[in-house]
Length: 208
Image (cartoon, rainbow, N blue to C red; front, side, top):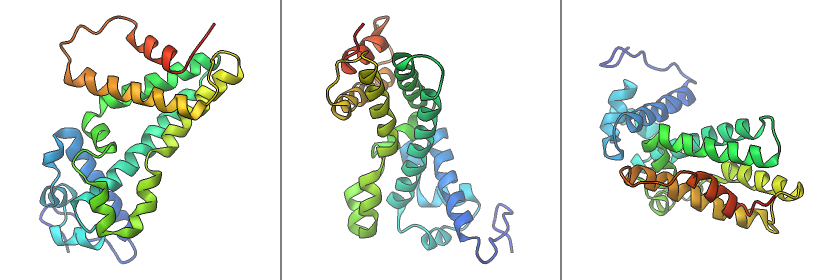
């Protein structure tokens, strides 16, 4: 049997594949529109399934967007780790990681906003599905860990005055996130040259 878009029904045991297809469909809607474009009906249509089929895998729209955020953070972590594995000293690798972070935010603005709760309510999701609490607590920690490692490497190399890489990486993440959001929201603002380097150098406490 096929759906209205000609998609064949998943065979028995292919539920995990359908779940991934639902998440991929929601991600495409985000990439091509806004958070408001992600509705259960729109996701079902994009995935080529009927809306009731979603409920076998997700309790509601927020649960889908949480899964989108999980996939997005995993993708972001992969990109940051790839950037950190490049050649160069610790400072160059830190800057590469930060540049990769901003590039992700610029290339996928809808997806990026969803990572930080746009269009989905974490407390509401946990209230409805309590077993999601542990997943929400871990959301983004892998990507953050790459920043911590990069700052720690700079400190170990004597290129950063950081005494607490985790705390300084958190400050750096705040700076990068703020810049990513403001650069989109205030695109006409005359952003000064070298602002990226200033954010990284100051918040990571880099030194000669």
